[in-house]
Image 1 (cartoon, rainbow, N blue to C red):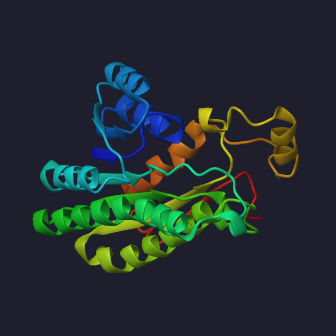
Image 2 (tube, rainbow, N blue to C red):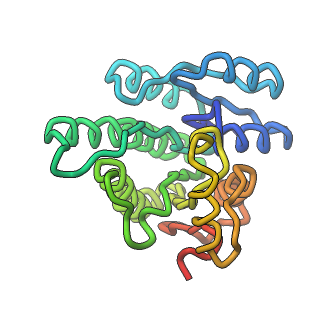
Length: 238
C-alpha cells in the first residue's frame, strides 16, 4: 500500500508513519516547520518526507501534482493549522475566514486529485480525515476558528463519501480526544489530570492508539465503512 500522510513529522502523524512503515508500506509524509524531526523519521523508517504548507497556494498545488503522479492507495489528511486561544469577540473576521481557507484548501484539493486518480486508474483507495473530539459535544471556548474548521471537515468528509464511492474510494474520519503529544506537552499537569478524570477510560490516548484506528480505516478490513467519524476519545462520546 502506498500512502500519503500530511502532517507526519510529529504526534499522531509520526506514529502512523512508524506503524505503516514497520509493516512494509511505502509512505510519503509532509512536514511544515519540523524539518529536523521529519528528517529523523524519514531516515529511521525509509519514508519520503516533503515540505508542505497548507496555507500556501503554491505548496498545495505542488503536493496536489504529486498526488496526481503518485498512484497512492491511501491519503491521510492530518495537517492542522495552529490557533492561539482567543475570545470570539476579539477575533478578527479576516483572520477567521483565512483560517478556514487554509484549513480546507489542501484537504479539498488533495482529496479531489486522489479520487480523480482512482477513477482514472480504476483502482480502489481510502481517505482518512483527522478531525477532533471538539465535534463530539460542547466545544471548548476561545477556539472558534479551529472548531469551525473541524465541523467543516466533517461535512466535507460525508459529502466526499457519498460522491467518491462510485470510484471505489472510501472516505472516513477519526475524532481523537486530547492525545499525549508534544503539541499538548506544555499544558499544566493538573489540567490534564482533570481531563482524564472526566473520561470513562480515565486517561488520554497515545498517538499510537489513534494511528491504529487510522490504519484500520485505510485497510481492506474497513471495506464496508465510509462516511463514518470514529471517536477515538476514551468514551467521551458515550
